[in-house]
Image (cartoon, rainbow, N blue to C red; front, side):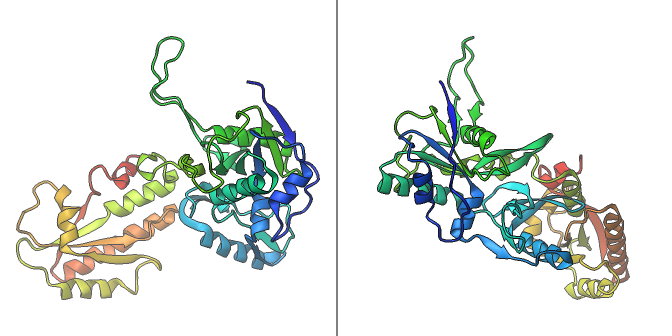
Length: 369
């Protein structure tokens, strides 16, 4: 295989409503079937109007950016100082949800495209229908990598080719059957394109030639792309061994481990007594600490089932807490809040004990960190 990486020059500034297919086709009349277009997500976002207005500077700008970040965040993965690693609503885990303030007016922020796979399909379809070009399209953005310094471009959206090249079941030259090897080829091509695009050269599109044959790999122009797009690159939560940062995982484990179960044996618990205890501590617990009651059906299905020797005829109420503390001092305050609640419960004649998280749960694993 012999690859060429070619810059698409002369596209210029992109604004909302611009026709990316026309801009690219006019700037690169030399495109041919089988080329892979690597398109920076920023120009896709600009053309699609994925921008927000913010103050140009000062604390108001920081506050506005934090608000935008919260809106783009599905869950926080890790937080260190001003750095926020989050999972976006697309499923991508990245710093600041991919929000970008470079190569844009100081009073605006650029968000990721709403659906990068759909954006790639639409651009591929337009190039084929209007310019008779059968190309693959990768929408790329820059990300860091866990355990490695430096940034590289990766694929957020793809059309016209599979995101992953699956080698499982193939046999290597030594006769070994490959069991796990799945190559994220669209990420590799995105990184290759970034070599000539750069960050300050205003070259938002690159062409990788020679990877695909003379026609695209599948028919994604009509949306019938059976490769699954770049969503195939998002690791399933059940297989994610590092779904949280260390501090966040430990805090989640401590929170779950601090679940209280109140019991007086087989006799029913008086909910009013538990409510009085909760009311008694409501004004003294750390702001943000919330105690929640879990009904008996959930107890039987979950936590209590994990406690050896729990009497089958006992009744119980379970209290959990939220949100999970992360800062060491928050953990201290959290422990104090639990102690206050247990004292208040005892004053009402309701005994309590701390339960471990369910065996095998992510929180249980987090406690070992």
